[in-house]
Image (tube, rainbow, N blue to C red; front, side):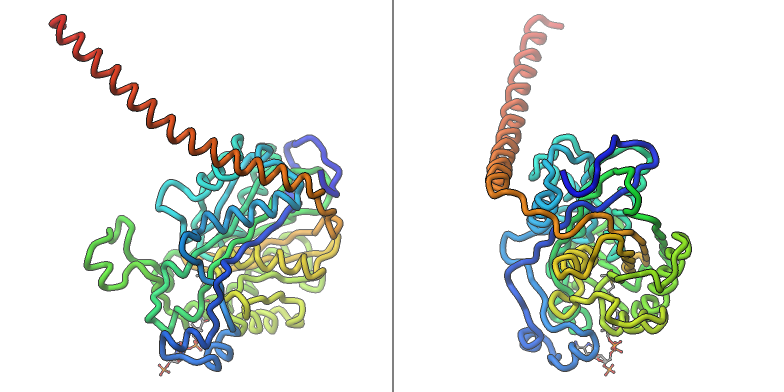
Length: 395
Ligand code: ACO
């Protein structure tokens, strides 16, 4: 199936990344475009954040559609059929709906008929949280193949008149496939943390049970991101190095062992500060912030995909993933890259059949929805007839 020798799924199996993919909307909004919307400038945004442009979802593009593209690419790299997936996790703060979970929509769109599915909300730490949960389920012997996606359409909850926040965010999705395997390496250790006392620092105040949607909440822009940037900045510069050191010590490793750090992409100054605090060169911290902005839970898997594509990852490299975000939450993970790179490109006929299968899965889903309606209608007719029969008999 891929470069790892597969073994029977067993208790204590390690989780290895065997597939990866990313997707961003076509539409790009650069800093000059933003300065036409709010009182800001290209110079201010570059200097204070490192961001130059971001991708913004177009009409009809959603967290699901971006997740689907990223997941299909990841499955392609893993040379895996969606029916082989046991679990689909989507980390997001911008699901298509409050419910059902975007993960369920993705499970249906992929035709992952044997997979359980759930969304995970842990702000920008969500992807690493998701990886950690999936890796533990694999280690417990429950699952062989897990799809973990980080995906966001933050542009839909951005206040485009607030220069403090609208310059920061972008849309995108990244996905990985985890495989249970007895081979050494893979995910070695993770640290997850939360401090809900910081809930007000980064929040979407309305639309939940605390403040249901109303004309007033809409008027007060309570359905858009509210952030105390300075406090989040201070928190991030402290927690990223702390969590990184903790996860490395848990894995019995030192900062010098790390080949590449793939951090949450929020602000280049936060990344520089983390590099100083950890005492490593900035070149060992991957950054693509300039092209995508902060894509929340999508930022780490997107950065990982790009690092792999740019040949920055080699077999046996130690990678450190680290993030922080709304909650407040933080997460760090260490893994030893176990797959030989580059992976062989699947033959074109395989891609053709897979695409055909996705079309068929789409039609099947429509048919199921249609049949559910017919079934409900037939049930109602029979139920009414039975009621009439009983009334006629005087029961
Ligand atoms: N253009 C021009 N001026 C601006 C802009 C802008 N876009 N935004 C703010 N300013 C002004 C402010 O009004 C302020 O003016 P004042 O001094 O007259 O009051 C001045 O610039 C400085 O503002 P600060 O907030 O101190 O700017 P700072 O250097 O802290 O940068 C920033 C702000 C970029 C938001 C920074 O604090 C940051 O990156 N914080 C972390 C944010 C973050 O990571 N959030 C995501 C978390 S992850 C998640 O879960 C989504």
